[in-house]
Figure 1: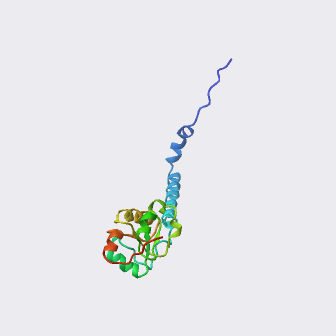
Figure 2: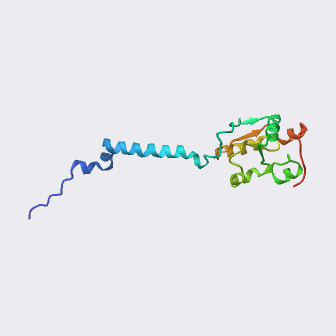
Length: 161
C-alpha cells in the first residue's frame, strides 16, 4: 500500500496573522482606522462639547472669596456641595445645593452654558466638586476658604431650607 503524503502547507499559510500584519497594505489600513478613532474621540469632546462656551472665559482652578463674590454678583452659577444639614445652617442666597456624594449623578441639573463656582464649608470638598465638573466638560472653579470665610467677610447668607 502506498504511503500517503501529508499535504504541504505553503509558507504563506504558516505565517497566519503575523504574515498578514507584515504586509504594508494591512499596516496602512490599521493606521488609518486608529487615526479615524482618535479623530472621532477628539472631535466628540467626551460628549459635552457645548459645556464650555467659547464666548465665556475659562475660569481659573481657584478663586478667592472676594473674587467668588464678584462672580456671584455678576450672575455666575454658584453650586454648594455641602450636606443638607450644613446648607440649612447657612448658605449664600440664590445658590444651588447638590451634595458632593450626589454630584456625579446629578450633572444634568447644572447649566452647561454658564461658568460655575463650587463652594463648600472650608474649600476642600469644592475642589473635588470642581474636578468632577471639569472632567464632565463644565467651566468650573473652586472658592478657597469656603462659606465660613464668605460669612466672616460679611457677604450675604441665609438660614433654613
